[in-house]
Amino acid sequence: MQMPDPQQRVPEVPAAGVATEVDGLPDVTNLAEVPSPVEVRVHADPALIPSVRAVAADLAARADFDLDAVSDLRMAVDEACSALVPLASDGGQLRCGFTVIDGRVAVVARVPVDRPTTLRQDTFGWRVLDTLTDVAEVLDGDPAWIGIRLLKDRTTT
Amino acid sequence: MTDSAGNGGREAVATEEEFSTEEPMGVDVRRSGETSVIRLTGEIDMLTTPALRAKVTEELAAGLSVLVLDMLAVEFLGSSGLALLVEALDESRNRGVALRLVADSRPVSRPLQATGLTDLFEIHTTVEDALAA
Image 1 (cartoon, each protein chain N blue to C red):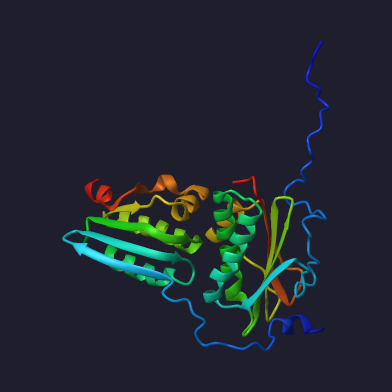
Image 2: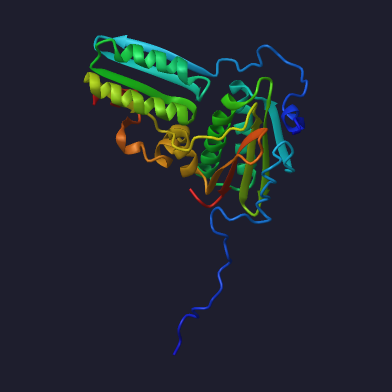
């Protein structure tokens, strides 16, 4: 009897939210320096967010994301930066690190804060962020910084 | 306690008063009788939404029967822009104004679609269609 082999292997994809080496999960207790192949540092100023989201879109396009996925990542990075910038200490930098591996883009955006802070996740903006990405999480393990980590796969839209 | 991490964000960097963004967004309002068309161009994000909100609020308070938001030339629509569209929709219903969007390009249609908002709005592909609806 010819039956499809039920044991046939499909490549294993880590569950959403599960950290893998590939994703380069940052040391969440030290967000000042997060080693990334690409990092953009700008004043924590809303006027500079367009430049950061443009870099995100460019990296996604070069990683063969389809146009909807590029648009989603651009919007997600915009939202993450927009949520963080108002929390930044005076004169602080918005730092946004990008890692592109195996058709996924990982983003770690963060700003320095004057006191330990977290981010509300009951907002419309967070819901948008969560919808647009495969993983969206707040990084609040470093008392001097607040960050958001995003993962977006080129095939998920 | 160390404050080195915090200081990391305060490196001395040359500052420019206006890092500039020339006209990131344009808002052009054409009112005729009880109909108003607001033509938006450029990027609708955290930075530009307040100016847009002021215009939309002003038009919605002007006793219109139809408000058309022409978004054909919008290049980016962020969540603050989406939130404004939803607010405008609520307000238009409160005031009995028909709110119509004009959009047919990815920068507007994808954010609406990805966030499940498309069906909330009356969307047309040309201003003429929106006015004739």
